[in-house]
Image (cartoon, rainbow, N blue to C red; front, side, top):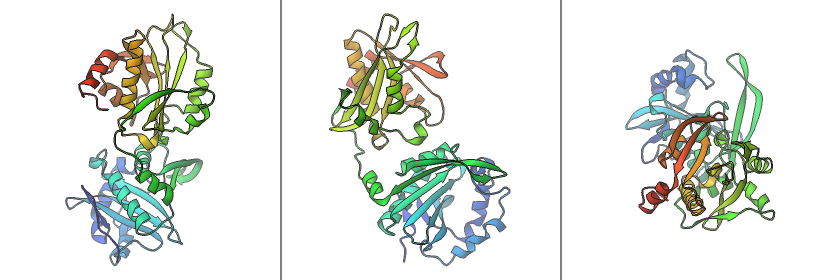
Amino acid sequence: MGTYPIRTERLTVRLMRSSDIPTLVAYRNDPEVAALQDWDLPYTAQMAAWLSGQDCLDDLADHGWTQLAIEVEGEHIGDIAVCLDDTGAEANIGFTLARRHWGSGLASEAAYAVLADLVDRRGIVRATGDCDPANVASMRVLERIGLVHSHDAAASYLWRGAWTDTTYYAITATAWRAWRDRPTAPPTDVVLVEIDADTAWSWRSVQAHRSQRRFVASVDDSYADALFPGDWLGGPLVPVLRGVVADGERVGFLMYAAVTPTMPVPYLWRLLIDRRHQGRGIGRRVLQLLARDVVAGGSDQLWTTFAEGPGGPRGFYLGLGARLTGEVVDGETKVVLDLADLIRAQSRGEVRP
């Protein structure tokens, strides 16, 4: 006898039945829901008739696909698809959510609950997931539940008459347990440390999620930019590199351009918090520490630029009080941070640590 249904704080994940076909058909026929999915439109009740084969199940099928319904307050709002290989040791996970529930975190909550059950009860040794590289929302769900980008495959899938790319994620059960047990609370101590020739290699382990790489460059790319910094405002940029340590662990990377005769305000060039330590308030702590250093050096502002897009850092900077300048620099939005205000807000507790 299985553990289904699985219940979390906000939802229930249960085995899908043939009685769920009308709801499944309804949200699968939403063009926005179907845009980056692999079923054909229109999606009909006949195409979903295979669900009748699940009416007698009380647990996941031992191998092959099982469709699970996501339910909130009795309403069927989406699904989790699980495919176990012939050994039952590897599971592929997919998910779909009705459009009006997008952005709620419900897909991540449901997928995480299913993955935990697969690891803890079914004893899988590896979990995988894949999606179209344009499906940033699905990439972010896979990342939130602990999977790690493994590779991209070009022209790997014939989709609606055209060959398209696929991005793949995976994690072993051992690595997933370590992800689940990682620190998630705000750290007690955050410090900025110098990066030198002896430590530079070790900071390369700090990495963002795959879905974030269009917003923040890797440490390797930042090293290349530091080596060949180029000019801005008629003079060379002078990079300053710092590592971020939280409670004794390497958790982030910072690079900014120092004030020079041609650079009147320090420029925040890179801020990268490792994927395992995001959501702990470390980025805000780093900027507060940098603000104190910059103010001590005689500057009261900090410039930065960022790329726009879903999942980007706009909300992070505006939440810290950054002001939009209306300028676009190399395709990125420029903002100004007033550092005295940031320091005062931190001391009053208005900017959470």
